[in-house]
Length: 315
Image (cartoon, rainbow, N blue to C red; front, side):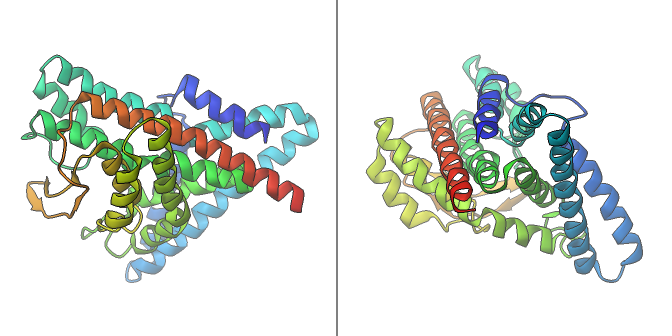
């Protein structure tokens, strides 16, 4: 239990370290290596290759972290506690989400729209070269909102169930979706199972995120009634089964409209809207989104502690 608390506090204080030996980057390198291997021997069965890649990566990541903690526990339990805390810290991205969004806002405040577009391009997949000020801020709100689930609530949820090893297993699942879950010629078949299995792992956390945001909206004095209303109405307004859950709750709390058409690689992609266009998206809306993020993260940590305590009592 203490590992969850320390890992969470480390994330809030330190944030995501930007270095080449970050464990998630190592998982990414592992994914590429395993992908290359299975593609070479299963060229005509790419769906099978993708599934086997997923199984092997998940197995390696979980077993490595599990054994690492087991070995250190035999040496010194205190070392295991510290290591477990650091491992959980690497899996959570609360402060990083806020910081990456504020990097974009910094350019908007200076009326440097070109700079804001360029900075935004680092954190979103859509084309940013023609976005105006409000569209840029809208993209920031959407990014923070959507990633509340897989960047914060989901890792805490799995840490509560199985500690650092299961939190890392989830990050492996999420990383493979990010790397292989594209619907292009290269990954439409290979990425089929990684994308679907990521949906499975995010099913519960995404829905918890939506309800957490409604509760947090009440605590922060935002429009919690509309947050609940829009969440129930628009939670499925996305091509992905989990993405709209936190977005819908945030859109309702802020009385703004998210989603809608955007350009990707020069092509217009029509998307459903989320929320009602009642208020303009400005910097204050971004700040409110960050407040929702942090308060939801605290609820997520409490949830993880309750889950962990319950499992320890039962088993």
